Image (cartoon, rainbow, N blue to C red; front, side):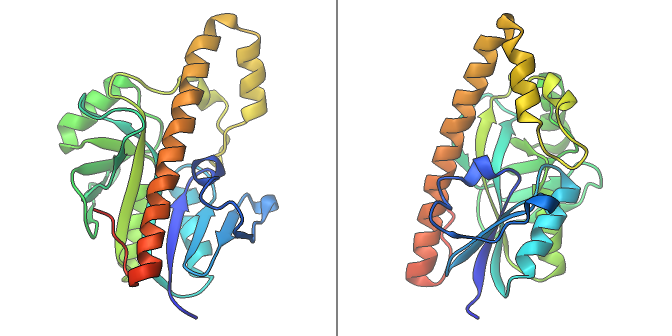
Length: 233
């Protein structure tokens, strides 16, 4: 079997437009969503380190992998990074262990944490790790890439700027296995009109960021199909 790019995202909403029309091999009972074509396998298994590891293992089980990508939403840690922008971090740091991983190309540093960071936590992370972006999965993907001797890369889209953060209330609607109880959250917001504006703004930003991410991933896959290598600079 020809080696494929493995793309690891947390949530199907992040990569929905990219995988439209692809073959689906999902296991909803285990909350693992897998999409494949001739050049790539995309896996979503939820947010956080444990779910990212499950996603990587699912990708590795589907044949040889040429590159392992961590993709999806990330928070900005500095004011010059705007919502909807696309970035390719050169380094990924695990905040829990201080392990640092190098991507095949890119600029800046992404720090991986265990939960969504608020504005105050973002400022602290920017200083402590000299980082530009924050997410919840990339360090796990990078570690597994290193353990399996697979080149690693990351493609992140900014979902919240440095002084913004998804509502802390989201934590209350996040399950232990890394999924958001979207219907319960929507009902909670529907009964609280003062939350409508901020929630709608968050949803619009997330949708636009996901669309930009999928366009960038499509470009990378097209380059891989054409040249047999990725282009992520």
